[in-house]
Amino acid sequence: MIDLRSDTVTRPTTEMRKVMADAEVGDDVFREDPTVNKFQARMAEQFGMEAGLFVPSGTMGNQLALNLLTQPGDEVIIDRLGHIFNYESAAAGLISSIQLNTLAGDNGILNASLISGAIRNKNDWDPNTRVIALENSANKGGGACYTREGLLEIRKLADARQLYLHMDGARIWNAATATNQTLDFFGILSDTMSVCFSKGLGAPVGSMLLGTKDLINRGYRMRKMLGGGMRQIGILAAAAEYAFDNHYHLLAEDHRRAKKFAEAVAELDSFEIDTDTVETNIVLFDVKEGAAEPVLAELAGHGVAMVPFGPNTIRATFHFEVGNSELEEVIKVFRNRFK
Image 1: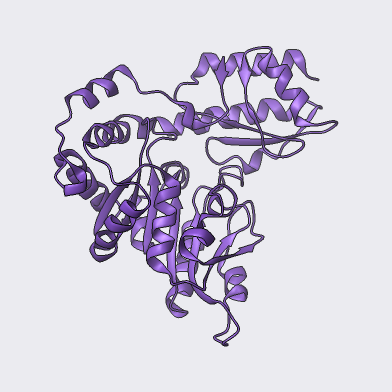
Image 2: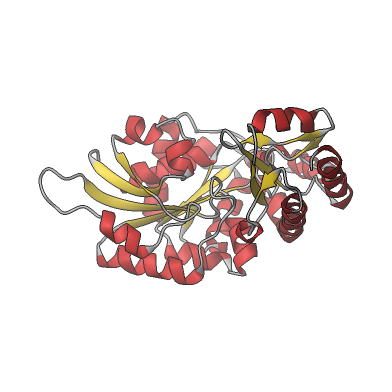
């Protein structure tokens, strides 16, 4: 099966497993795991931030950030396609007693003008706008990325209105690759970031919250409250560091293959796709007549796995386990089975 359901399906390589087995470990609840301590400091330096905190998932990283930046009754501005709004089980309301103000951006990408119009006045009956949350790249937006100029304008607005900026950087590696930006550009712009190692980079598990030393110090306690206090996690941190060192440079090829696949789909009358929107490793396309499910069943019957992303929308996500030969096989299936 050629698995294009998600870049989370990647499995640890033999080399990664060896690094995990050889990792020096300690008890991280006591903050004594040397491997994760070094990796947290390294990632903070990479992003130009003060400190990092390894967490089990991107959801925990995002929710820790929102909790640490807000008070109950506050509001977070976010695109309506954002992961925090769609895929985190309404955690912001339950954990932090805050609400999300969702805006209709462009493929999951907000701009300063749209955000400015959504910032609340300081009336007693208004929620307190406290945080702008951006997802880069935007999953439900088909892997769309923020431009450098767009992010600088949003940061300027956040400063002028005394708001925090949180970046959900689950696929920040893809965004940095696609827009040719250094990682510290994103970190310096953000008050907090959540970055993920278990998607395109290929680690088996793990994300990291980045921010100031004070915020991360408070994050340790909140992570523990959420059940995220882990013990000898140097094993996982070693896998994440190996993924960063050895798989980051492979993302450009994922993007190239995604674009080539999108161009092949565009040649078929059965589907509708705007190839100009394919910036990273995610491809969204629509079935012109009928629903997505029968198409997905047909693909599965011929050894190709993708996922529905709406009644007639399909998502294909490229990763390093799908090479050139697998790409050609996928294109062949599409050309043979669909017109």
